[in-house]
Length: 466
Image (cartoon, rainbow, N blue to C red; front, side):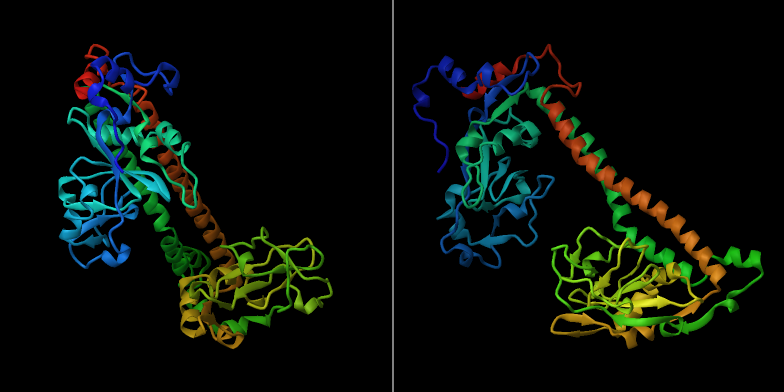
């Protein structure tokens, strides 16, 4: 049901104004002198929400009037019409008539995902919405809908709204909570300046975000390209020239010829009770390191030396539901106590002609993993590779001296890549915080756009109330 305004006609202009304004003691913070705090309902001709069509999802049709759900509201406030539901024109203008949306309607998600906002554009129409989306229809174009949307996105308003959430099986906002939300109302011209300033600053931040996200998205691709250059000899071409050797020094071989100790781990049950020997499992095979943060233990420590792992061993995931994890490898570091390893892993021991660090890097390269993918077999949704198939992995192996040089170069390059990745992650985190900061400052009048000589927003409010 739409939020009602009882006996509004019988109120005098002074009473309407008093009812619309937020009392001093309820104002969240101070605003410029020519602004005023008002209840959102005082600026709105209608605050309502969508409707569930008769028959629920069975009412959806392949083509028709688009039917908005929360997932169709993009993060930038636009509406995505990709994979949007549809209802018939008859349903739209009939049973769903009261939730027909109009241009400039401000959208607020009120169930499940709370406080997400959007604005209906002319190009979105005709459009209807479900019960998880509320809409605010402003009384006049003198109030900029983008200004009000940004006010609601402001961290203070979000906190005020979400702090009054009605907690049921699904958290929800009521229309009353939305209508009572305090709004810092600026003069009309200042609203436009604030919106323009926010859009300009957000555009610049989005450009920075896109570049940072590109760094993250291309991280694995860059690593794969660097590894490919390493294991085809490109990275050490200068080193070979300086040492008077050529690619003829690289020998074709297989994994079985350069390692020993292909051995599956224990299938004994383990748990989190620290009573026996720790067991490394698939979750402990990190990206380039052993992750000891999630350890399980056997209920005893009676594991023979041959079935333990030791510094310099390599663990390879041999079986997993995810094909992408099969073949992932990690070098075992120095351990402070004896460790066993689980049956979904295979342990190998590098020989004297291959450096453990070099081999681990190679096994995690696209060159080696693509061979593993071709050899891996799938059964009942589980992907597997056995020791014989692993042993057949082909490689060309340089001398130990060149292996050391390759490892040195890769360590240096990957350290720089990791720094770039971490810097990009920091940028992404800061961008979200900066946007919140900009919104918070905007609606305190701190963006440097306010003109104190302009007519007070109180006069605008009086016109709206008429």
